[in-house]
Amino acid sequence: AQKITQTQPGMFVQEKEAVTLDCTYDTSDQSYGLFWYKQPSSGEMIFLIYQGSYDEQNATEGRYSLNFQKARKSANLVISASQLGDSAMYFCAMREIDTNAGKSTFGDGTTLTVKP
Amino acid sequence: IAGITQAPTSQILAAGRRMTLRCTQDMRHNAMYWYRQDLGLGLRLIHYSNTAGTTGKGEVPDGYSVSRANTDDFPLTLASAVPSQTSVYFCASSEEAGEGTGELFFGEGSRLTVL
Image (cartoon, rainbow over all chains, first blue to last red; front, top):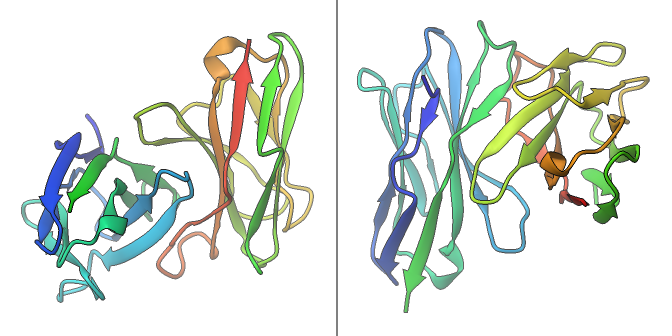
């Protein structure tokens, strides 16, 4: 079974609107971390946001927030007030401390296109 | 600027040739990783090292080897390249495995084409 599932290969959003990128995960660890990374067309990987499995509050970083639903094992990324520069590939990743020695596993990504 | 430096940025290689991708970091991170990214897909872990002197296999280790002689350097070697190893390779580092958030810091990637 895939550890990280991103079911949306591609998403479109109108500039200035909000968009949610889906991510579900599978782990038996009690302690784990969830991440979102952005990969623009230039190819670099940019860290966006982190959520720890024990964090009770949803993480926020500027226009990014992570909708963490632990019981459903989902960690959706919400981007508010989309900008043209948000067009990129977005990867959800999970770091398992107990069963995977702290290594991170990535989903296949979602390509987001922001329309003017 | 502190971070991770990868070399070469891009390389075309004949099948059967040996190739080493270099990775150097100056953040004194203990954990380092090599991922490959194939077109339209996510990153898959090839090898990792939690501290200098130790290495481990990731999800797709076959055909690759690594070494970690010191904290800063983590080279990836393809002993005899094959076309299926055509990919973009990312080196990454993080704070000591099991501590901190585990955010990955990435190099800019090395695009390798094996003909």
